[in-house]
Every structure is written in structure tokens, then in C-alpha cells.
Length: 114
Image (cartoon, rainbow, N blue to C red; front, side, top):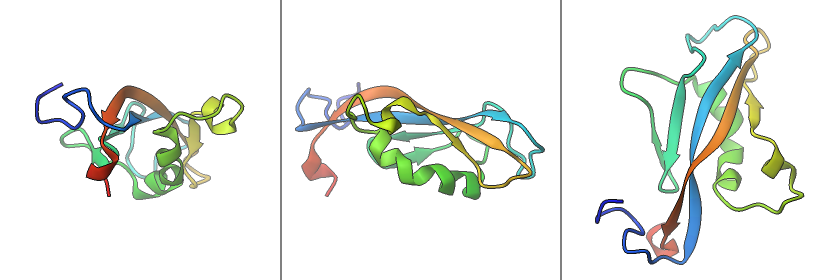
């Protein structure tokens, strides 16, 4: 971790996971031009990044976005969201399936986020 990254000194009063949302499969036709393997990363609580030159469909993003804040946190073992990592784009012709993966646990200061 670089010295200028949040939580670099090991301090912080909370922990969040960085996430990667990846297109796992497309069971129909890709009307938005996305491909299997396309992804975005959500890091440091709210930094969304895409690989250079790639895009992510805004409708697929809208489908997964409400769940990302919860997936960044520890969840109770019986919570359905702790077990489920797949989300679907709402376009029935496309049937694009995304997987949300935790990539890193990051210690952060809550005061830096509000």
C-alpha cells in the first residue's frame, strides 16, 4: 500500500472490501457491446474505475449498483447477499450475468468518507 492511500498507516476505524464487478456470461445477444470478462472496480469506498478503452453498460451498472455498498461490508453468515454474488442486467434479450467479487479488504477512516 502506498503511503498516500487511505489506511496506509494501519489506522482507521472501519474496514471495507474493494470489489470487482465482472461480466461472467452472456446467455443472449450482447446489445450493448459488452463481452465476457468486461469489468469495473470499486475501490476506496466510492472510486469506480474501468480498464482503459472499455465501457460498462449503464443499465447493467444500475442493476448491480444498489447492492455494492452491502457487498463492501462484512455480512452476517445467514444473509442471502453473503451467499449470492450474481446479478443480471434487466435486458431480457441480453441475459448478461455479472459476478461481484471482493478483491481486497481495506482499512479506512470513516471521517474521510463523510
